[in-house]
Image 1: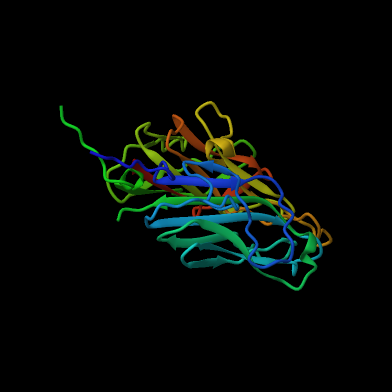
Image 2: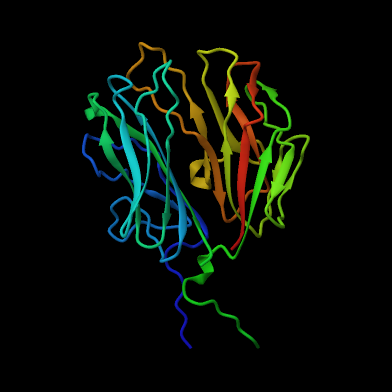
Length: 144
Length: 161
């Protein structure tokens, strides 16, 4: 009898995060790297994502950023996996008084492949020195 | 002797999951160090956690895995004040990120402040497959006499691993 134990996610609920500033630049599709893993592990390429088993999973990502010039100095992030693009979450890099509270949430239903939180697009401000102070990913693996 | 082995991969699935919602039946006046006293619970099925409706303390089951998400809704008593909420354990200690605790923070920025002005984190999370005995949502920073609105809520996924 053979038995293949799970080797990636050890729990139906997992989290990954990075509490260190990452030096984000104005490059679209840049991975906002996570480097700490709770009940999960790094993606196979160790490129800042989370390894996934082939299970349906709900993922919520958050990022906390800083800006350098004005409230227009924003960027959008999105969650993505190896096999499918994900839902986007609008992300502000600056939260000036009098402006709206910007949603920091990114949401995706993943079915397979590693998952990453990436930059998607930038606002008109000088975002070169914008940064991601903290990146968080949470997941719930669902019944199949 | 009888063995029951799971199929490959299946041990990580959420075999039994109950979603639980905690809310406030009335607005709560808050200052720094106050705990949000959630007093109303709804659930999609059977669950093992318990809620102290006087204190808002959530006692967790050691045999379950949890994802707890608190959505923040506050009226600040001063328009220039900031706020922060975080999960604390039964000893009153803030649960660190390494132990699955993540705060919700909103920082006031003056109009002239355009650098190093972080966006808010909207949700205070706690995740654990080896949960602490109990958790409470603590006001870590806020202007005195602010208000936690009834729209403030907690969603908990209680999972049988």
